[in-house]
Image 1 (tube, helix red, strand yellow):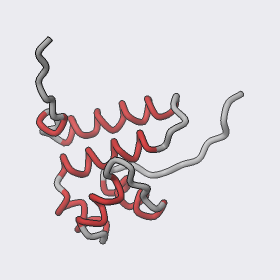
Image 2: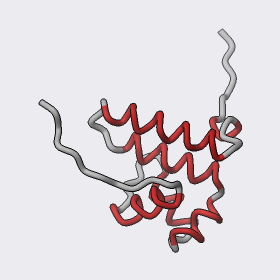
Image 3: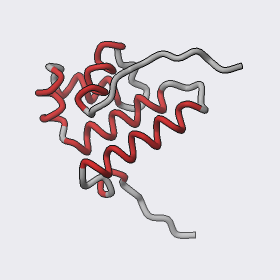
Length: 98
């Protein structure tokens, strides 16, 4: 079987595309116990939006954002919050439904 490399960034062309991607990732993350899924999604959305713009919005340098949201990265909660806010979201905590 022949495969091709697929790049999500080519699909996230508009703000609506980015928003839909983030919201789908939030929905997926609600059912997953691995927070790196959502961190990765925010990194993808930040890259699609443009790291320079996100860097300006957050006050975090581009290299710091790339490192924090790269595979295996572990963003500080403050960086996570700043990037989420730059994308139009805020962090909340909710009780786990048993």
